[in-house]
Length: 371
Ligand code: NAD
Image (cartoon, rainbow, N blue to C red; front, side, top):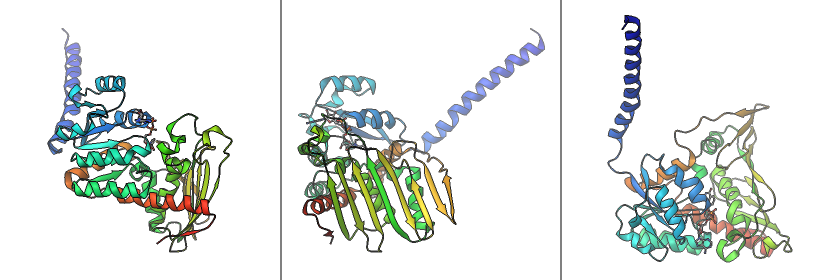
């Protein structure tokens, strides 16, 4: 064996050992810093959002893992149970749901069901002693939201709503910029959300959805206007237009737009549609503006700002955790530490009260003053 060949092999071996060591060491160091146990999530409802967006990301969580599944479809329990290594003892039908109480591997329950089922399944999870993360809209009425908050409080467990944009880098930066006075004193918010609704789905069936585009997608315009404003509206005025001859809109609304006047004088113009695509917002002040488009999508947010007479795109660095992982981990951390979630049940309740006021205003063709 010549010296050069040996040294080359030697070097390759050294490099190999070195690269393994560098791959292992940081992980070991992180593991030592981590809490002893990751909290376990049970996912309730194995539909599109749960299986495509949430479940694949739980493995990226620092403080949580997927430990149980709840579904009315045995084939889904079998398929996703095998895919995610969930033991049969941790797969539940809806009839068996209350037995989650006896499973110590379930700390957190994430309710991702049609809107009209949110209240019942959240309340039963609280009664089973679990912390509850519930999808938006929190429920189909403010009264249901109040019952969910009361149940979580009685069980001394946390309740959070799936407002994922609050964990997204561009949205967080937009809030910071607006609060810092970058655009001056905010005078106008425009917020537009909509998509073309596919026929034959529970979203178009009012008893299941609680309402049309507003409950589903317009709620992003509403929630964004509130987190950008940093204050609560004093008055709402809404207008609806729905083509009732379109079979999709027999029971739910298509277009509903509304204005909100805030105590500071700031006015928000909000759009909600089931027949056209929108995903944008802008906050304009006396010195400039801050805008996102898309604003609340699953990925690909872009920000433009205007100040000193110049409009430019602003590149926002990614956060260490994407919005899905950030939300899941934040809730697990809150459950562990006892800290109040960034978007607790009360935040969902505020939106539902305003949604009820928007519907009332559109129905009665008058502005609704808010207490
Ligand atoms: P989906 O129709 O894909 O899934 C709903 C699930 O509920 C299905 O697995 C379905 O089998 C189950 N289900 C149980 N009982 C049912 C019944 N009686 N009728 C119909 N379905 C029933 O819907 P999705 O898009 O996953 O939405 C679920 C929830 O998640 C909704 O509240 C929605 O607003 C919310 N969501 C949130 C986001 C977000 O970005 N935060 C995105 C999509 C959906």
